[in-house]
Length: 631
Image 1 (tube, rainbow, N blue to C red):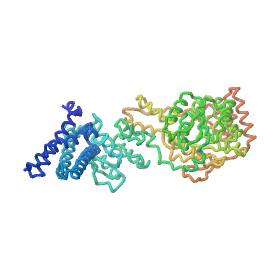
Image 2: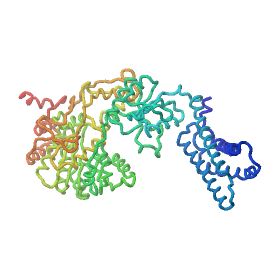
Image 3: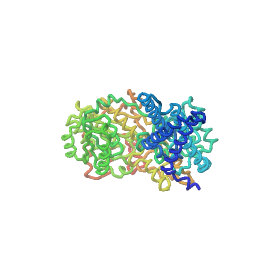
Image 4: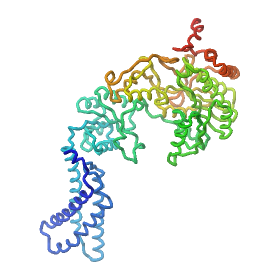
């Protein structure tokens, strides 16, 4: 039975039904106008008025295509289009009436007939469609068979979400309520659905038969989102999220676009306010060089630079395919977001290649995001680590000075603070070189930005957890107490741009990373957001700390303190200054050791350059024993 009613009513049947409604409306309008006793003179005029009125109605239906909507999903927009179409037709008849009077001194149709006919036709067509919708929803496809849904957001996005659920074929969702932060909306109804204040969320989830909660607004605060998620976890409610309007297909929301809430959405914080004018003055009509442009950070820096309309963005990376994909992406932007792009395949360790890049494009600013970053991999490959993270940075920095680049922004990491691994130590050495070079030359300002893990970056923990969940594998966490700072990729890159514009030279900018996150708790939340149950559907397995890994990370060394900036999320670290000649000589000695491939000798030299580098959970811990003995 349901299968029969699931089929859409043919458009021809809808058109014919509307036609007969018009016929009946005209006849009833005449009967009502003349109290069911139509004068003989009016009957004579009825003979030519009747077909004229029907022709006007049929033409307006064909032009407006009122018969094309799916009747059982009729909404206010459909009703509005029907009423507007009928009103235009009636207005045409009224104008024709006035012209007839001016020419022939007679009214072809009494105005009262036009008004009554309009009201009857509109009422019959709208009510007829709504009746079919009610019959389908309440009798053929009753709410008792549907999953209860509450929509967070009683604004335009909320009502669009509700209509999308109603419209989607085969879905079994019944919206039982809206939730909104606006107290003025509480107690009212929208399309017959009650609106509740957000303070009532726990009571609603507890008392109503709700299976899903859909977050339909984009400007919800991080704190409110956290409260919603915690309440849903408590009552085992699945959470869905409506994407931003710009992501809707052809400006319309599809049910398939309503997805499960991502952990990135949950950990992301309130939007960052940037000094747009300052950034525009720094980037507009300038040549910008981005290294590591195909990586997660480098590619996002490119995306965020584009709206400021630089003269040229030079994207440098060794990864051919990701760089090509990025080039395709940014060249397909709308015309108001396009700028000249140049993709350069190159290795930052190759001085001749990089010299050619600087000589050819003469950049006004360099964003240096290229680096090896995986801690366990670098722990096993110290020689390659210093070649890329140290030598590569030194080559770029020296060329920036040689070619009078006004500003050089280096992307560093919190792992450079009291490093316990090779990767963090190489980044700290690169920081030291850039700072000392800044003090050594007056031409180029070197700025360092330091932050923690970014959500969803290549090789980070969240994509790994997602893959394990999708495959039904146990989630592997190194240690139950391990914590990390997290920041979204767009947020990190926004702060990199802001710090770059703010920097005068020689600073290490550190970002407010918020509260550190327990990785085990993060895994548990991802399991819940996936609709699975820990211990039943999926397990967490503790694998032990990896080489060079520490339980928690820091943003400042014990010898450092910070100074505030105009931006509440950016601080300046006060760090020890180094003599350029001395540090340059040490780094040259370190790089020269690459040819020996003697890992212990390389790491020992790194520890001499960075005395606070104490290995942890690593084979190089033995090199620290003399230091530990002194302590």
